Figure 1 (cartoon, one colour):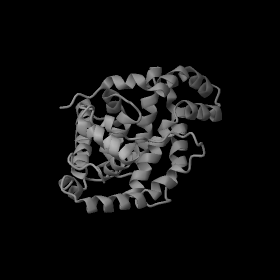
Figure 2 (cartoon, helix red, strand yellow):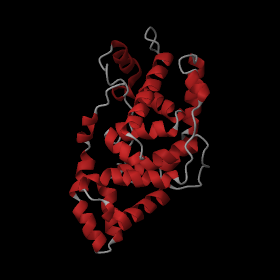
Figure 3 (cartoon, one colour):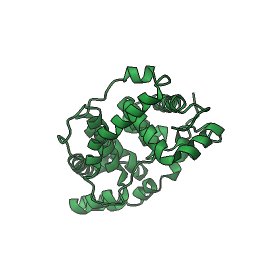
Figure 4 (spheres, one colour):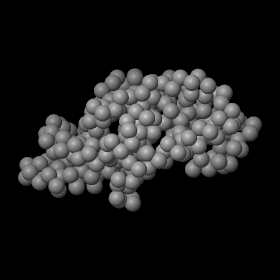
Length: 260
């Protein structure tokens, strides 16, 4: 099994920042100041809103929930209400970030039925032709409209956007010449689009766990608590997700011909 680097969790700036304001949140709860409480949560940890939007967008794109039926704001408001009512459950201020993500996951799970494997995609991931990849890319671009609509619900232009990079996929051999060639010839934008497209075709648990590890910088132990599954299962999801992404890249961009 690949070595998952847990030290990345120490680099989560906002997550450490959140713990500093834990006592203030407790005070606002005691003062019954719900509006100020919600604003502070949103200020110190905006990524939880992005996590909700991303998961809803994935389900819309894959046809598991209808476009327009659910709004990100509804889930965010429900999460903040839950946090306001139950923040006393948090015994250690360091637990605040992944506690919020855990509760967000529970709220989403009541609505979203996580899809099974797309067996045709996974079985043929190394065999798709250049034309088939182009068609998939076009379908991905069209289907992403539902997710963009969800993300547009946020008014703040500084709202954090995900940026998938090869360094998070090839964590053991980042200096590989083929990887360097991919980055040079295709650029970060195309790499992000490809990884995002593949993630949207993988089972929802794979994508959400990968996002928690790569975008939110949670450790496998913290993701285990968020998802309510063993650490070994989290590690397995991350290993398989990275393997599928690597396989798709090597199938679409053979080392002898990177250009697309």
